[in-house]
Amino acid sequence: MELSLYGKTAVICGSTQGIGLAVAQELALLGANCILIARNEASLEKAVSSLGRTAAQLHKYAVADFTAPEQVQAAIEKLTGEQPIHILVNNTGGPAAGPILNAKRDDFEAAFRQHIVINHGLVQAVVPGMKSEEYGRIINIISTSVKIPLHNLGVSNTIRGAVASWAKTLANELAEFGITVNNVLPGFTSTARLDSLTATLAGKKGISQEEQAAAMAAEVPAKRFGTASEIAAVAAFLATPAASYVNGTSIPVDGGRTGSI
Image (cartoon, rainbow, N blue to C red; front, side, top):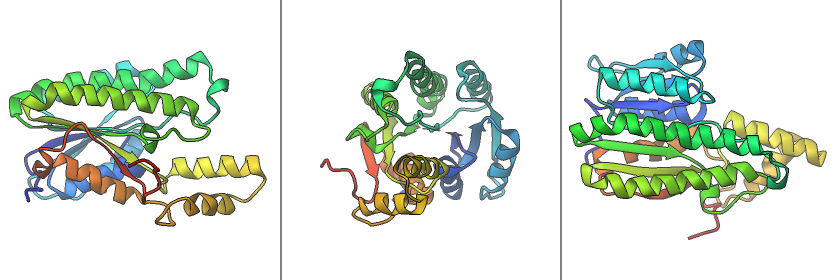
């Protein structure tokens, strides 16, 4: 089974912490040259320094804010002008929690720009190089809400579903060029976002954050939250030559929590 990514270059978005950083670390271990994109330069420098490397690997970063599509587009166009990109990992923080009926138009528009418009611009920039290299992997870190909408995440459920439909359409169009498009759907994962969610829910219920976390973990057949590295391992496999015939899929990595088959 061919898992080596030596000679391949990967762009990983939202990669200074959590799942994004874990994906970058896994891709680096497989030999890829990793380019991290996020908005905080100090955090990017620290993240790049954490990546494993051999003498042949070169890791670097680009600064861009994922709430500003023009910044991200300028960054990716500069990068694709310097080298072909073989692997693109789309990953950015999800919309704020809340009932869908309470959502404002601006909430939907901001989420659409951040998750569809930016992703699409990134793909348009990297696909020509992927075609010329006859190798491409586009991996979207989304959510299990793609399978079953999650309570109190109205805007997120809506936008995540749109990303999955966009990705499936791309997968059908790009497969003939040796480019695959797949989605990784994390369940409850120990990250800063989950910490924020458990704190918010605990406050609304008048219980401790520990009690809220325990109640959520009890919903998972594995009886625990996942780790960022467990999500990253699946994303990294999808980036390898071994996954060349996996295309157009949405793969839950959630300890079995999602109720659909």
